[in-house]
Image (cartoon, rainbow, N blue to C red; front, top):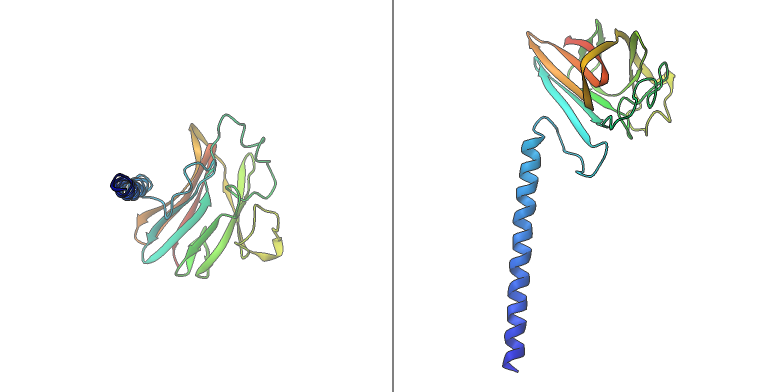
Length: 197
């Protein structure tokens, strides 16, 4: 009888220690992931092939934030293969890529109202069309409707000397209320000039 009670107490004690240890490990892993992805608003699931991530910066007093899925090349032909030329693309994977800014923002010379927009593109061999659209809550470009476009910008297609394995957006402050949005993936890139309105 005493032996059974003793075994029960030992089992409960071991279970308690095990649970506490797991919580500590989970906190350490979460802390490490945050430190590793300090440029991201939130890290995607570690087993996702296209994790959700974000790029952001202040352009003057205007906070510019891009939320997107970041697929990897993984040996595939991307442009002209996985991503067709001259067709609307979600510019990422899964849910639409979105851009938001808390004050009016000038993009490529056009002033846009503060708010949140979907960011689609039409990749081309020589140039890209970058589209801001009001429907930012959609899967891929399944529900894309040109009538919901707010603005379109045509920018040069830039060939990269060094391939970018994982799709990447950057919001870069250049000072004096000016900056750039830079897209890179595989062997292609484009840049949008932005400034405070």
